[in-house]
Image 1 (cartoon, rainbow, N blue to C red):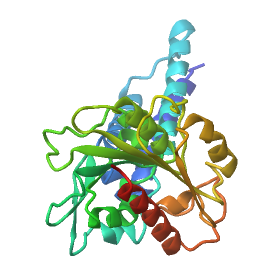
Image 2 (cartoon, rainbow, N blue to C red):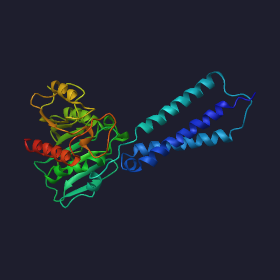
Image 3 (tube, helix red, strand yellow):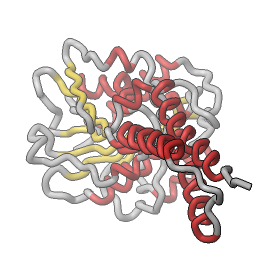
Image 4 (cartoon, helix red, strand yellow):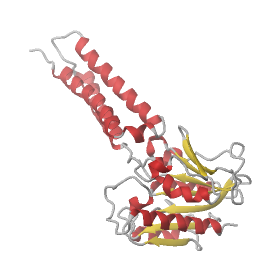
Amino acid sequence: MTRTWPRWVTRIVAVVAVAGPAWVLATAWSPVVHGSPLYPGLLGLTALLGLAMLVWSWRRPMSDDGPRGWRLALRLVGYVATLAWVAFLVWLTPFGATEPSLSAMDGTDTVTVEETATQITLSRVDSTTVDGTGVLFQPGARVDARAYVAELTPLAEAGYPVVIIKQPLGIAFTALSRWPDPLREPYVAQWVVAGHSLGGTVAAMQADDHDGDDLGGTAGLILLGSYPADDISESLTVPVLSISASEDGLSTPDKIEASRADLPEDTVFTVIEGASHASFGDYGVQPGDGTPTLGDDEARAQISTAMLDFLATLP
């Protein structure tokens, strides 16, 4: 009896390898193409390999016997690995930016917004800065970098240039080594590192790593619905601001309270009453989050004001 089931399994897996990336692009085209090039590149490569696998399965001559022994085991491992890879790519689908951040990408009369493949830069039209201080921002996991533009525009208007990192695959740990080159950012002498959720965890690591740098080093740390992964209470010497939300279902109030022991003793803790985890950006509802009772506009205004007040206290 002809054993053709491995060929049909190959075809099914190939279709999944094409359909998965196609679904991501169809449902999240804008945030995908506005993110780091790595993710759309991997989506395209996976779809092409799936298509090639599908064509090969139809053009390969039929045989009476299917693969056996180690060849069959190897093929089964390949099937599982391919399906797991496609599932991972689908899971990486970003939370797309919504209004008013999408409109804020056009800039204002006083702030210009420049978008490249690796970052979004907000700066005053007249290029002035406050004490040469800039803000380096790490988005939350799988969140469109554009989702924070409305919230961070007031900082740029006040004279603090902002660089929002586009993280490869939308995961902050892949951007851990990203640090502005002082030779390419001559208008900034020191950086306040800020981040939301997982981005804040990585921001804390970056702030600690660059604390004490002679040029372009850390001036402060801002955590938005976030906390450090390790104890930096003794190693970090710059001011720290932790802004949390009372209705946050992910970085819960209990987790924020527990993070006090891992942060410097003089860390400033600010709670936005009625805000949730997703209130720190404009990207819609996030699974696992709490239900906010504070309007998005008011939450955004309070968060921006808290950051500006903190920046004004820096030496």
